[in-house]
Length: 294
View (cartoon, rainbow, N blue to C red):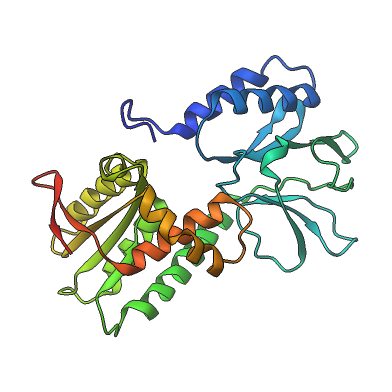
C-alpha cells in the first residue's frame, strides 16, 4: 500500500507487468522480459501469479529473498492432471514444491491441444494434458466457499476466546488476515474484555521501526476497528525491535523454527517471539503517538 498516493501496490505491479508484456509475441519472451523488470524495478517482498490471456501463459514467482510463500504442485495420482500455484500447500493429494526465489520467474503455457508447455525455470514441472487447466468458480460456489471459510474461522476464534483466563492478544500487522481475526475476536469476546493488538516492527533503530509499513498499516486498521466497534476496549501495543535486539535473539529463534529455509521463515518467527513477550507501548490516536509503556 502506497501511503503517499493512497493506492494499493498490487495495482502498480499489475500495471508494470501489463506494460512489460503487452508487446511480447510469445510466452517465452514475456517470461524473460517480466523476470528482468521485476528484478530491476520492484523492491521489497512479493509473490504473484499472472495469467496472460493473449499468450495463454501463466507466469508466477516471488522476490529473490523468498520472503513471501509460493508453491507449485501436481497431483500424486498420475491419472489426475493439473497444476496448482498457491501460497499454502494443504492438500495431501498434491506433491508440493517450493518456488525457488533465486532462479527468476516460472511459467507454463497452455497449448491449443490442452497440453502445457514448460517455459523459463520450469524444468521440474512435468508436461501434461488437461481439458480443464483453469476452472473458475461461479458466483454461487464462491459465496458458499466464502461462507464456509468465515464460519470455520469464526468457530476457531470462538474456541480460543470464550472462557480464556487472560486477555485476548492478536499478532497484528494491520493487514486483511489480522483484521479479520480481530473482528471475529470482538464478535465472541465478552463486551467488557479488552482486545490487545500486538504489532511488531523492525528497524535500524526505534525511529525507523515507527515508520515501518506494518506499523503504519496497523495504526490505520486500528482506527477503523475503533470506529466500527467503539464500545470495545481496543489496545494497540506497539513493539519496536532494533537491529541489536534482533541480532541478540537470532540464534535462539533459528534453533527453534522449522522450516528454516528462507528469510520469510525467520521474519515470521521473530515477529511471533517478540510479540509473545507483550512488551511495548500503547498507541494513542488522540496524541498520534505511543505514550504508555505496557
